[in-house]
Amino acid sequence: MEFSELVEALDNNNTSKVNNLLKKLTPRLVRFLQIHMNAEKQDAEDCAQEALLNALKTIKEDKMRNSEHILSFLLTSCRNNYLNMMNKQKNHSLEDYSHGFGRQPRQLLSMLDKERKRLLEWCMQQLSNDYKRFIDYWFTYPDSDATAVAGHFDISVNNAWTRKHRIIKKLNKCYEEKSSI
Image 1 (tube, rainbow, N blue to C red):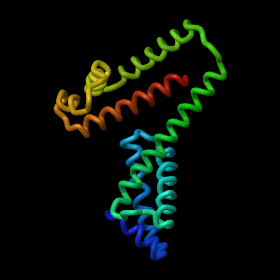
Image 2 (image 1 turned 135 degrees about the vertical axis):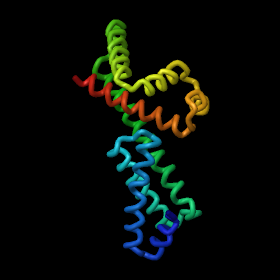
Image 3 (image 1 turned 90 degrees about the horizontal axis):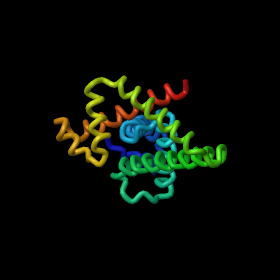
Image 4 (image 1 turned 120 degrees about the vertical axis):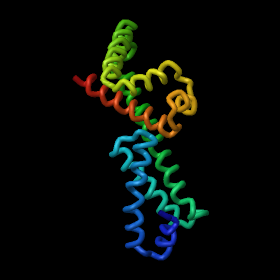
């Protein structure tokens, strides 16, 4: 699908064409964030909407240099919006944590680390044998790149990334469920 038509439709005030293109483009941006950035659906939708609003503003102000690259512009914008959102959440949660407890004794941190490891090990046991072998390889060789992993498991590089993110998502979900009990 060619989205450079979006610039032309906006220039011509063709609202129905703009709306039609945005309806096709929005799910694509959301899926991009979910697949490549492991974003939750709500976060992906927020970031996609923000990217679209910024793109529409840029087009209206005639600052879009090359309309043929609108899709890559939007994908990059979505990714940056998501990374900024995650960075703000991480910084905010760390600030909340540090204000609430002050300096913690080492025993408490050690106990928390042991509990986290125990939960992670339990969640890993819930994975299929193929997934266990795959994620064990990443834990054993954390500096490996996707090409080396793909070669080791005789799969494509894209498949290696997809599997890794799928497994991490499963482990995160399992960990969150078990830690909230």
